[in-house]
Image (cartoon, rainbow, N blue to C red):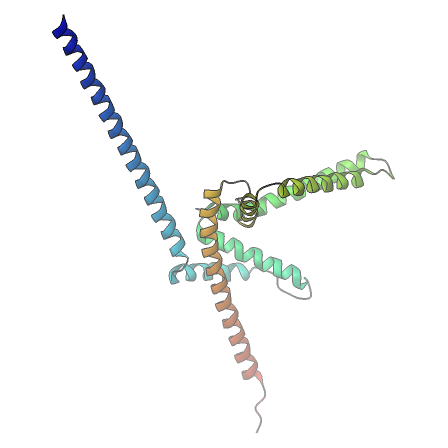
Amino acid sequence: MEPSSSSAAAAAIVSTNANINTDRTRRKKKKKSVLQQHQSKQNQNSQSHAKWKTEAQQQVYSSKLIQALSQVNLNPSTSSAPRQGRAVREVADRALAFAAKGKTRWSRAILTSRIKLKFRKQQHKRQRLASSSSSSPGSTTGSSSRSSRKHKVSVLRLKAKGLPAVQRKVRVLGRLVPGCRKQPLPVILEEATDYIAALEMQVKTMTAIAELLSRSTSEASSTSEPMTS
C-alpha cells in the first residue's frame, strides 16, 4: 500500500507543478500580448500625432480650408465682425475634422456638433411655442424655467468645487477637447494630444494663408496706384 500511495502523491505533485507551469506560461503570454497591443497602440498614436506635422497633411488641410472659406459670407454690410469670426472658426474646425477623417473622437464630435445644434434649436423652438400656447398672459413660466436652470448650474458648480484638484483639472481638460466631456483620463489624454497637434497645424496653416492674402492685397493695391511722373 505504501508504494502505491507514494506514487499517487508523486503523481499529484507532478500534476500540480504542471498546472503551475501552465498558469505561468499563460500569464506570460497574456502579459506579452497586452504589452504588444499597448506598444502597437502607442505607435499608432505617435504616427497619428506626427502626421499633423507633415507638409502633405498641411496641404490637404489648406485646400479643404480654402474651399470651405470660399463658401462663407464675409461681407461686412450683411454680418457683424463677431459673427464673421465665429463663422471662420467653425469652418476652420470642420475642415480640421474632415482632414482627420473622423478617426478621432474630437473630429467626430466637431462633425456632428452642427447637426446637434440644429436639432436643439428646433426642439427649443417647439418647446417655446408649446409653452406660449399653453400658458396664459402674464404667467411666470419662462422666469421659473430660467431660475431652475440657474439653480442646476449653481449645484453643478458646488459639486465641482468639492472634487479633488486633479479631478477638477481632468474635467476642465475634458470640456476643452470636443467629445471628451465624460470620458476617462486615458481617453482624454490621448484625444488631447492629437487635438493639440492638429490645432498647431491649423494655426500654422491659417497664418500662412493670412500672410499670403495680405501680400496679394498689398501687391494689388500697389499696382492699382496711378503712375506719377
